[in-house]
Image 1 (cartoon, rainbow, N blue to C red):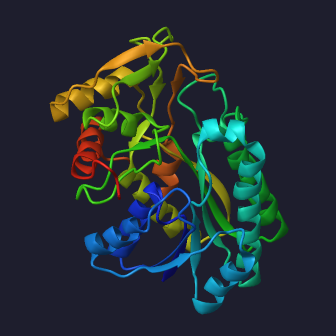
Image 2: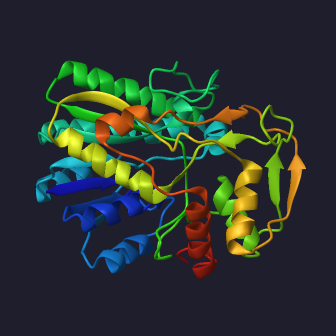
Length: 336
């Protein structure tokens, strides 16, 4: 079976490639490398001993996208490709709307033309906006507080309209919480461009000496230690969630959303202290004022994914910290 992965050279995409290749799927990767490196593909091939067909293509380039579908018999698509920085999306909203939404529309249009109607979409817990209560279930109210989150929310609505127009489609909307960690080999991991936007790569870059100290945004939240609480999930567990979703979409039609999270909330300082404990590396930090839009607590109710996809997050916070450190210490400059 042949799976097209858009954004397959990225952080979550590369880990999903490993899981699929290990299960015997043929993997075709499409990526414009705007925030990823082709080296990750080579390393996935190294880990699995399997080859990946790679196309350096932008989803906005319809003509070359069609060539991918003409040259390959594709059974399903896992769609990761998209811009992903919340802060950047606030500065350049039109760029985010054009890239993420238009790119998805072109992809779905081409899929429909070539009768490929099995799709897994990389959504996000940002579609829940400022949550009122935790844990968050899939039927919680949807809203978004920034352009990045709105692109995910709008795409979910577009895909619902697509299914309503053509009931042959089978679509899984996977709402991720906070992916961290790396493959246990230390060969692939999170490789942000410039200063990291996410907490774990910031911690690991402080630990490896690339950054001076961690800034903790606020310690006056209504949580056990005053710092924000999030649902951190190991990227390999997340990748396995895509395999489980693929199993479902291949044998059914419809559209469904699933939370991929552990169901447990850990604070920023929980993560820092666990990292220090398992690695023996100190992470100096300073407390600064809260960021606008940040909520006190955000963690998933993963019951639906447990029941319907038979998917469970298996790795704990110590595994996440150890694997993230193995990646960063082996690759202080990422894939460079």
